[in-house]
Image (cartoon, rainbow, N blue to C red; front, top):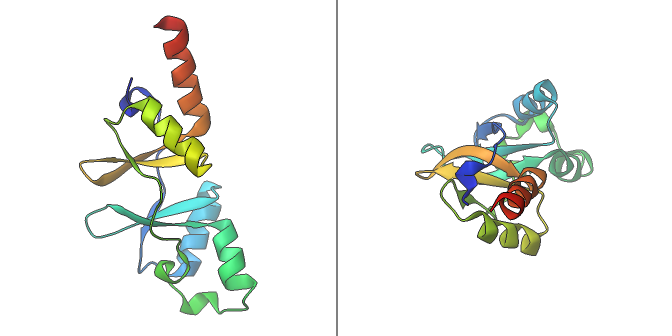
Length: 130
């Protein structure tokens, strides 16, 4: 079974140059806690979580209006998989990295997000239905 057989979440994304207030508005609008940062080829290069914004902006008393996504993002991404990757291999990587989500690419471009819950659901289906 590969990643393409799972239901993926539509990813939120921005560019490295996206102003930080815009990043915050996107997260608020979609009621999400993280957004992926993509390059000009739409390949994921980083991630910003609400925790990153709190720790790297608010806690350090920085002016968010003067910052862009690249100033706050966590990079490089330690876990990215391809739509055709084996789900069992992705499972082991997610466990190793203690990650609850994994950005998914297709031909190098951001395609979706695989959540831990969806991955487990797919693996259970595979176990019970062969």
